[in-house]
Image 1 (cartoon, rainbow, N blue to C red):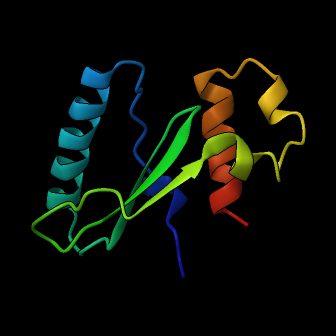
Image 2 (cartoon, rainbow, N blue to C red):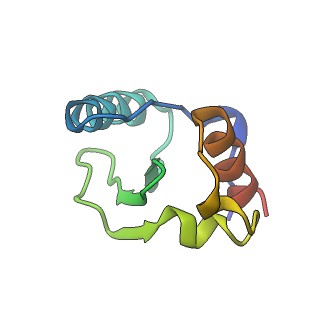
Length: 98
């Protein structure tokens, strides 16, 4: 599997309305892509949500993972720290790039 890390879009999600807006922006991004991107991900400090994209419709989350559970493999202290968006982004990149 190849992930183009330069094409990853970052959306801040702090409130439920932010999630709705991020999903709409994600759909816009996926529709504008030249090729079908089969999966998309939204990450916040609580959850990593993975969606399937068929070129027309974004599914409900097909996978929901606990962010601390996943990212603590890259930083054992992850669940004990206050997490800011830049650090969360860096950890998510690290997880995708391995």
